[in-house]
Image 1 (cartoon, rainbow, N blue to C red):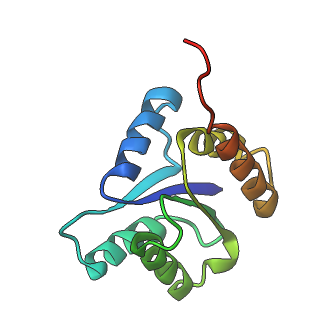
Image 2 (cartoon, rainbow, N blue to C red; image 1 turned 90 degrees about the horizontal axis):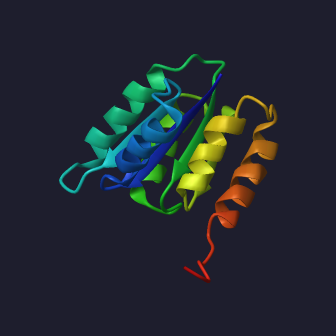
Length: 134
């Protein structure tokens, strides 16, 4: 199984998760982890550990994050590395709703994690456009 984890500063991941529920329904394989303004790294890493512990050791993880070099994703990756899950995880920064929804709808149809990663990046880029007329 592939689990999708949205990771962000503030409540961005929680907000995107809310939109996922509105558009795609309540998906048991989608999780959100938010580094709140008053949260320290230890508390955030605990939250990560709780979420990751709910996954089977054979599960794959798609981590979508706001900023690749931010402390939320770096702390989440540290937990995954400690748990030996690095090889079964892909990480993409700059998440947007087209990317998140594509992950949900295509994760079970694209077996290879690297191929899925490339598809999600493509879809995220396609989602950034201007509206020329209205």
